[in-house]
Image (cartoon, rainbow, N blue to C red; front, side, top):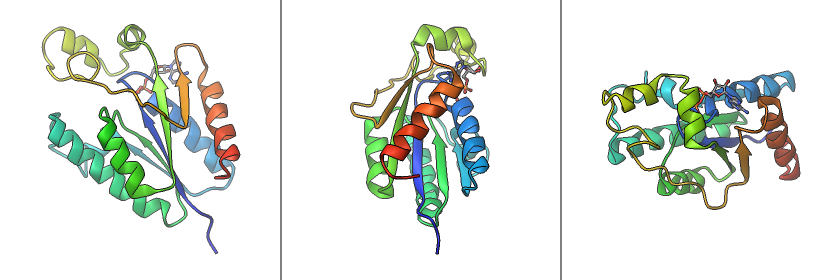
Length: 175
Ligand code: ADP
């Protein structure tokens, strides 16, 4: 007998808080005895998507790899936490269709706050012209129209964000 897995898909601008929240969520699920895996966009770009660029087409292929692995894991009872900018609605719609048990979380944060946080120094590089395709600044980000959850990370703590996700998952009968 195995518990049913599902996928929590965090989408948002660079610096909005996806990685931070997914780490905190992982700790929560581990503490509750769940099998859990994180699929972080930056990490996947270091292995499965090594060498992938940032055109719409390459971003799409990258998202499809993440979707595929998330589907394999979740159907084997793993709670999968995806943190991926996934800027296009069509990518996320495809992921939802392929995965089924899919919980879309919009990690919302105003662009100026993301620029101020700049945890990976990407905005600084883009503003200096060293990067030319940064989502939010030079490349489009299509906000989710009807995500299961929207987090406002500029005015909530990380713990509050985790709490909001957990209570929605309970409401949806995932946990
Ligand atoms: P992303 O993965 O979306 O690029 P990161 O998680 O790497 O973003 O960086 C987000 C930054 O914002 C971190 O420095 C984090 O400490 C900070 N932060 C402040 N408030 C929050 C919050 N409520 N949720 C997530 N991150 C937050």
